[in-house]
Length: 395
Image (cartoon, rainbow, N blue to C red):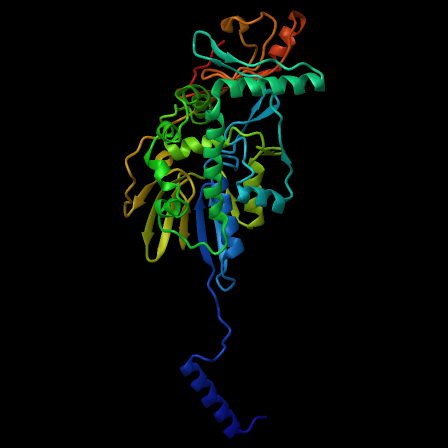
């Protein structure tokens, strides 16, 4: 047993160390409950980064609330007669280093598709430009690809290379965001300014490209088709958004085997987050250093912190105290899936030959038909139509 004098000395020493802030005392850390609204790639990656980079002395209990019955947000898939199709974010760019890292971390397979070089531009009355259709042999495809490339270069000339240079400059600036030891930014504007991308948000894509010397022909044809397919808008949309659309016209794009939604699903599981499906958040209020999430089901969840990872313009969540949202118009794109055969006669083309046409009004897939296969193929071919208004059901 320690003598009384010694015990007093130890006690006095401990009190002195506490006074000086030098004593090491086992800390009892309260678990912080973080609530994330939305299970798309924004919500899922937020859960991943919180779990991966939070202080070990700050235990986190992560909860994700999703109003739909599946995870993924815009990375959604639809089932059409037993076949699954991507309905939202269907392609990813190799310069999106986070998604590349996520797939490697989760052991997901990346797949690519080689599109045909054959396409055409339909202006509503006629084809203003159309390339050759490749044959079945490898030699034929190579020759046709070469001829189509020469035809595109002949039509657009230097503007084609200027467009690629524009995309390359954008990617170089964008990848600066992945540089180590970058500081955090309080606004998106500050973030974009740090990589010289903010000015692109203040001009239309058409203005940006004209200033760089691109011809009106390539802007009205190739660029407009790309922006319509990606965002349902003409080249008069934001310069930054339009440039991102142009990045999606390359040949090195990829997707996750089995659906891009698997990234979000894997990140949520990796973060060991609690997922609540079919739970719509209708209001968020703050009281006594906590946030109260009111759900459509009538339940109320208490959280130490809340992350909104869903478009507030769409969800209409009420806040107390209220928050200010800028008045802005959101572009809506409706995706309609149709099984059947296109009426080739509408394009004044060969009666039994459907070929891929990249158009402002439709995108057609490559196939070669004879009458005996029409009825069967009608049940096999799926068309994906993008529109700014909902297409009503039809017989």
